[in-house]
Image 1: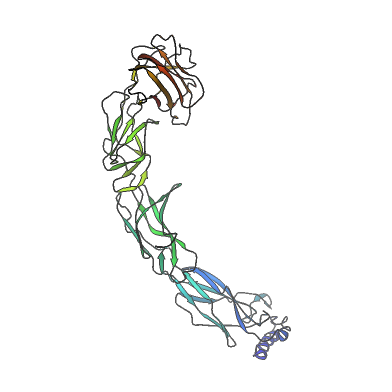
Image 2: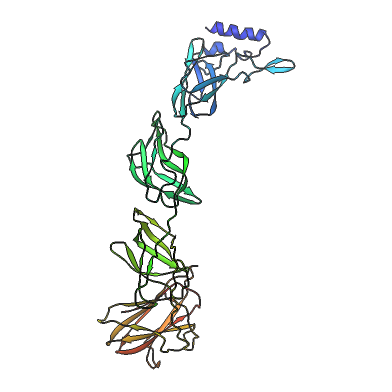
Length: 459
């Protein structure tokens, strides 16, 4: 065998080839024993081509100039010999040519098996053979069963041939859509190794991305991700019915908020004109909520968050606009001193019972009371003597400004103030033993900056 190979190599040398000029060590390394393939295991996406290098080597990894025959080519493969590959070159003036017998040969492996699979072929030289393992990865496949589903309509993706979804274990298959900078993760309703059904979130658009796909012919490989060939469009919900019902009680009264087709979640919130309303409560059946809305709003569309579609209650939606607008009355302006236009706050009996008023901190008058900021007045009626605690709290405005509020509780004649809170605390609160009668609460916007809602608690 060795003599035959060396004879062929030396014949090539006699014809002008230089392939075996470095081969004297072959005698010391022994006869060739292995077809060495690089790589021996290949991964090719169907429709693509990769190169493979082949060498005939002995036990000392010394290459022997040779040529190979190709046989047993499996499904989905096309093996092309590279006649221009030149690990050595033969000079035939004025051009360079590549000898057919070289210490290393190159082949181009074309894969064409859209469903994917595992294949191989054989390279043989002098009775010694080698067969690489070719893993043909599927082309992008998978389709959405619906491309324009209605809100709450289930969509299904079937696992492509020779691939499986992760339906058990610690990490399961997920489905998501990328919309701008947002990742909208669908709600999985049914998952098997062969299909996944889900409810896309409102506003989902584009191809679906499905995670943790396993190649059946190579289950130990790391899971891959699938991108569907077709794309989806789902509507962004709008609260289409008139959601706001104004309850009796004037500008500071709680209002019932309801919206056909929606549930109100514990984290429900609502903004009107960029100012957040105060949520008093959410109904036990989740069909409505009680809120105090900002005053002096003119034709503003409320924006709801923390709501869910009746048909998709597991998903909390945010920034959902109402299709109708809201207009609210203006809080009475009190001027620079206490007067009869002040909002009346009735403290409750027994002692410790809370009375809460929510107000939009606008229409503050000039500060003639010495509190250090524009002042707003409230009339406090105390029905019985006892220790009362007054707390003034406030929310940030839409830009996140916190502000600073101070307050005093003064007698009817404004000659004494049993509670005075002029600090930087947030909230401000104080207690005093108040006799039955009428008092004034003067609230000063010390920072003179905008805030969201003002909250006064009497208990």
